[in-house]
Image (cartoon, rainbow, N blue to C red; front, side, top):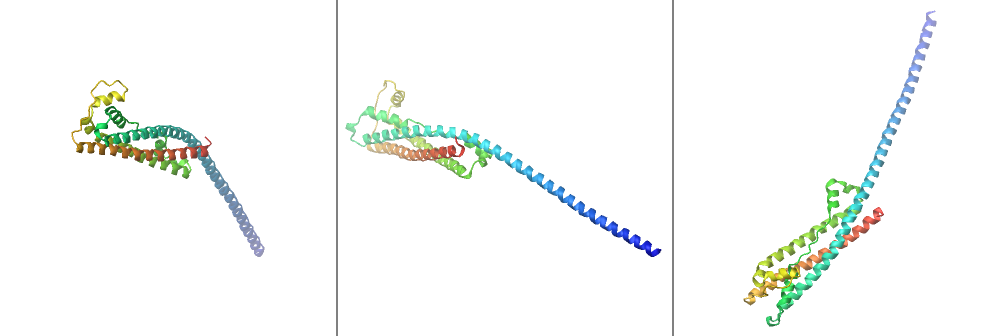
Length: 253
């Protein structure tokens, strides 16, 4: 009797163990399934979010690219005008130096005044760089491909050199002003600058050769700076045209 009872209890124990084992297996499968579904949901969420961000970035990049393209096209137009103006000014300065280096008896006073007026005339290049400045400061430069970013940075670096050369020309011209004011009647150059009839006396007060040499030398400095500035403008223009092409090709604009 006791033996039968022990066998029965033993059978129950085995049955309970098998049931617990079965439940554990079911629970493990359930946990694994839940974990997998959670992992899948998180991964899908990340994928959707990344796709959404990529879409927004691409959309924003295209809008910014269009704005930058407009800035660059304005720059190239301005650079063409600045190069043309500076080359004409450089020619006038060279002509002035040729006159001043010839015998004083052959000088054409009106021509000297006209060419000095041209020497002091200015046509500075003012870049339209609002979009690039905004993109760089806001961190949205990362929206663009690295090759395009490299071109943008190269254009900006050249721009700094170009503007620096403009500053050097302005400095050289200001250093010429005091001596020029002693030699010439600036009221006449003012009339010539605004295409007015000459009403003031055109005189040339050059007391000695030393003063003339200093005058010519200061004019030569302006011409030298003009030549370097033209080179920087041409380099700026080339980079600008290449960047315009790259933006159009990348964004089908």
